[in-house]
Length: 415
Image 1 (cartoon, rainbow, N blue to C red):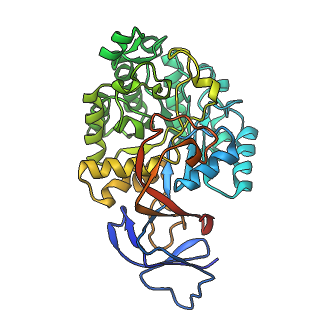
Image 2: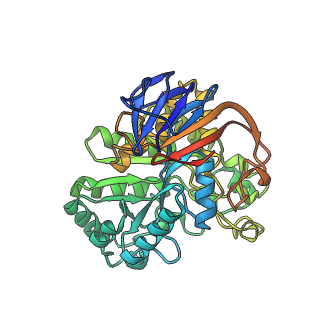
Image 3: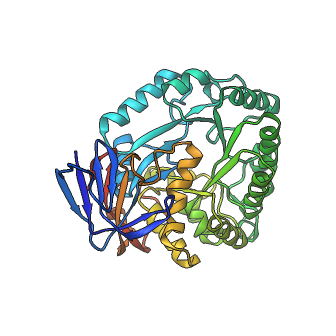
């Protein structure tokens, strides 16, 4: 379908565009900016006056519960590409399972879903999964999700194999033994509440291990959901040393700290945990410096999963519909331009995926578009969330910025 998006403010971080410009879509691609291509006739026109037109958001870490419900939540949040981890039920360690998931998502015709394949069979951390077959089935990289690989020799073999075939490995840096039985950041709040803490060293020890193996093997490494300022500094230093490493941060870690646990608020239990105010502020500065992606870390949980003592409650919260407004809030508070603010959700994430057709609105790019009202204020309530999971530490807060239209591959999927 030929679509003309008129009267909007086009913000495209990769191409450094921030101006009033019409956008034209034809044959599922961006066909024109500012001026319609020759012989173009719009079959549908969208009036974006007073709204921002930007590349569709790319969420590098979102765990679908009910697939249909959560993909609807994604497009309601402007997320047009979603990367899901392999530690689903069952884990994505066989090509047939990946093909089925990709086909189910495609049949829904909503957000583009890109799965991560299991690094080891059944995520047991011992035997390598069939990476070549998983890649052919649609996996964009390989990961253990939240499951550890305790045998570092097995991990080295996995890195070597992936490097040989040009596959990327995505790991959550958290040392199993240092984080075992922990529930919160190892700091003053955990001490006051009597909670077993997870020290920052649980993250930095794992980062050091992964960076050493990446340097030895040359594998492309992505570190998922960094939670500490020193961890982010380690990644930045490794990048200057020539190691092929990237990372992402959960958006809640830019806004919350250990103090938001309050008196055992299970909605504020995350994995990795919310850390100190110094860590939060360090992460905010680090993302502003560039080349770090932001993700929702969407983890849908049922009512009973949180109605438990803090240490027994499952970690995670809904996040797909909050990713954009929370990112906009961070950008305003940090004094960033809109192009700088949206980069961690668009072109930075696309570069990590190696998808040069995503994350921008240049001519010939995939027609993935998010149109949002930048000044619309809305309250986070269970009734206002599309996702089937209603748990969030941001419930009751007023946020600014609301998605109005999402277009995926030239198809209007949310309006």
